[in-house]
Image 1: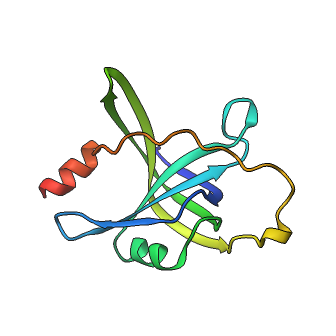
Image 2: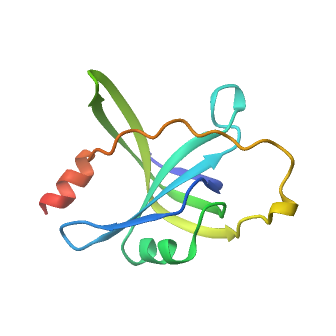
Length: 131
């Protein structure tokens, strides 16, 4: 079974784009506690399609706490001769809590997100564009 369910906070504002087929896709990036090495914060990419994705792009912004449910898709690409890969959750998002107010946030330093991978199209995106 290929399924991921989890919660986290958005690390950036949602990005909405349209595929050549006319379908909308909202791209989200979540910070998830206890997921990285030594239970550090890990990062998850999430794609939400159609009307659900459009609603997510309209309502959500950096800092929102959300729950996601979907399947994992794997993509690979090459950058400067090095092969890279990543997983993306394709599914649904539930809005849980708005961003915390600055005075309510803990005194912990902000988590530095690793440098983003260069924009590339996954096999799914290429197939969707061809459709």
